[in-house]
View (tube, rainbow, N blue to C red):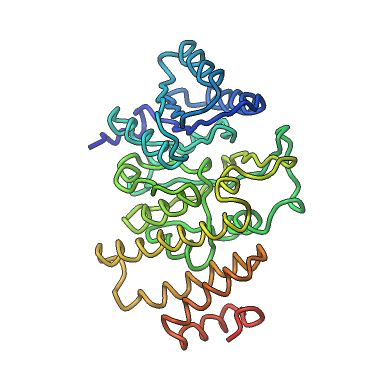
Length: 339
């Protein structure tokens, strides 16, 4: 059991790391580390988990960083490559065993706001029920320049739009996220209570593993709190083949096939957790799943993944045709949902 000393406990930044021979990745890491070291709240430690990087220079560089800051940085070198979710689980375990009250996820190329820890810590200290604190983000390119909205994908716009107005918050935020907003909290913009992160580890997936975990955090009783004060800078290079997660799944279509599968697993498991914990009734299961499938179908439709969208609509119909028709009408999905 971690002692929840939010005010004075040493917070832990958890950073998955993988690098090939691309020297630009070192530049990204240096910028990321600079923002962590310049946090207005200096009471932190950083655990970097290397996911069997093939570049020997990259491993040697991590050793140099560790040697320079031995009291601040801990390095875990994995002997297998399992993806960022597995790395984060190892970092969470390390934080848990070292009695760190909160974990700040930070990918090796994203930039935390300099007040991220200070603001997050204050929220946890003020609200003992808070389990997840998340913020919004701005997309930056390989040169750390802000990417204009017109160059962003529909899925990214969907996330940032979801932060406007009424971002999902409170207990059972997973319902709003899964059925109304879609993917909401970017990993590098998320800070969590170490205990709930330890209880609900990331699944053994390399796509959407974070979304899956957030659903279970929330269904397990975690209260979500949103703040717009500390936006993360989320790096999406504009002149490369695409994101690492998309590359691992064989391109855009493979990525979204995997996303649909992993998101469905996360939401389905969240429903069962919530029923077991008495947060929702068994009778709510079907309608929640239908709303989830249709919301995810909408996301796929925006990305022009028509086959996936159609399959998700069919899954909703299979559960209950009448409820599906009602939700489609309410959401004004008739133009593409075909019922």
